[in-house]
Length: 300
Image (cartoon, rainbow, N blue to C red; front, side, top):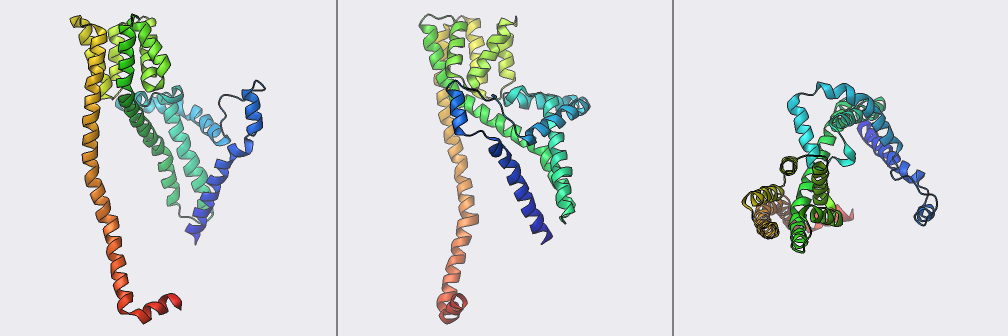
């Protein structure tokens, strides 16, 4: 009973926290009025919980970040690059958020539930969830972003090749296509252009693009582009050939993923559907052979 009571308390506490933004919402009429030219709402509205996390992160981050080893810091930098550094987050802010969530979930929510009779082990579990949860989220965000780059890059290169073939300079075409299409690919290309405008060598800027992303297609594009510049190959033809190769690789990857999915489906069928079917057959036979008792079980 204490564990059930604690779980229900945690559920209603989380529900109350999630309802705070809804209670503070001005309503659809005010939002539409703001779009029509009235008083505009702030671009970013954060809940009280998010503000508390950010406040703690701002204090804990500068204290914890210097203690990171060089290898750990480099790994976090790379993961943040893969995820596109959402909201311009840095390693210091990320570590601060991890510590803030661990404290709020462990000492805050876990301590409250412990006072209500739940096992103290829950404090350690919630603290671990608060500390490692952001790492899981960051890894997932990075993976999804790299997959989005893989999907969008062939179309991006086709449009870029057409723009270059139409007479635009490569840098102008790259900027126009990146601003028009947007997405992770557009963001990365605009970053490259900003680095070039700030004085970085063009080759170094594209090599930095290759290093901060895990997309194999993007790495192939950068390598092929740099090689085409060295050999003097027309850039529009090189871009078209790169896009064609990427589509072929994407089709091959899709077939490989489908082949890897087949054993997983078989495992799911074997572990879930087959035992359930066997149990249903056994129970049907049992109640058929013992009809009177089976009826008494369900009919009282």
